[in-house]
Structure formats: structure tokens, C-alpha cells
Image (cartoon, rainbow, N blue to C red; front, side, top):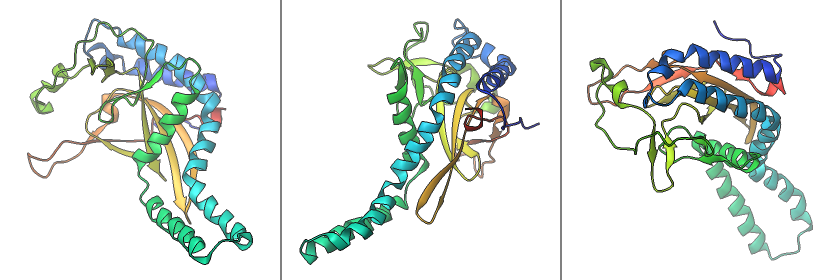
Length: 266
């Protein structure tokens, strides 16, 4: 059954997330490397991140809207300012043209662009500056750099084995990657997803972990953030997409059933 999203306090949301983590115990118990207590890691990360996110979520919402709507606001302001500008006609027309071209670019704003805006805000506002960004192709998007990841092996690329053979999960686990020793594939970080109008996400692997969802709409050139939700996903919360051929990449999807609103809790 979907969980209630409205009228919860910050502690209610944290309690809900901790309960979700406990329900993912089976996934976390078998997550590699087994020497790490991923259940404890996930709970500790949630206890730090969820209350903090509740305190900054309104500021983040306003920031995302301000950034995305800045060109539209600039055009609106320019309509007033232009009447009082004493410049050659060709310069005014050149400025108008640049605003028009910027409108074209804004129509192509992707979820990844919005995720980058969210990431920038969260990193800059984390109280201990330990929230760091992972690589573009790595999971999760953000991790807490002050956590102990010394037991993680060095990342190695391994040829993916189909899940139906029962071997993919044995090879998939957390590791340390790159010269900056970033922890990847960890279930105690924060993945950021942005969805237009409703929560419907496609991805390449059923990642267990904490997910932050920013819901937005876009109408008449204006972006509006309608909600920010959080949830801890298990493998069973994903649905494997059907493949047309054996060569097609396997994809997984999830919806918003397990997500709790941060906006309504703060």
C-alpha cells in the first residue's frame, strides 16, 4: 500500500525512512562486500541526511525555481527596462535576439540539468561540507565523505552476467573508484531524480538506497517545483522492463509508492 505523504513531521519522515531501511534488510545483508554492515551504514546516513534535508528543502525548492526561471524573469524585466534604454537600435535588437535564443535552450532543459542544480545547492549548504558528488555515470549521485569505506575493494569493470543466471548480484557491490577514491555503488548515499508531473523513473540497475525525488511542472515558460520526496528503495520496488531482443539493454523502473514528502514535513 502507498504510504501517506502529507501531514508528517520531520521525525515521522525519518522514522518512515528507517522503517523502509529495515524492510530492505535482506537486500543489505547480501550486499557486497559482506564485511561492511550496510544496514547500520544506511540508517546512520538517513539519520544525518533526512532531518537536514527537511530544514533546507524549502530553500532548495526556491533556488531551483529561481535558477530555471531566471531567463523568463529577465525577459519580463527587459520588457520594462527597454523603454528606458538609450542605446543604438542594433544593440537592442542584438540583446533581444540573445534572449530569444536562450528561450530555445530552456525548452531543452533535461532532468539531468535540474539534478545538477539540486546537487549544487545541497553540496553548498551541507553543514559539514562532507557531502560530495560522484561521477556522472556512478551511483549514488552524492555520498558522505566522512564515512569509513576502507573495507571497499578497488573498482573493476566486470562483464555483466544476466540476472536470470543468478550471478549478477554476486558480482555487483560497492567499491572505491578513481584517484579521488570515491565510493560507488554504495547503498548509504543519496541518489537524485527529477520527474515531470509524476514519479516514473527508468534506470540501468535496481539500486538499493536513499532516493530524493524533485517533482516539477513546466507551463508557459515557467518551472514550478510541486514537491520534494524521499524514500529508501529495495530491489523489489523496481520493475524490470521487457526487452525486444537479447541485445537490448535491461532497464528497471520505479514509481512513487514508497516516497514521503519533505515539503509537507517542514
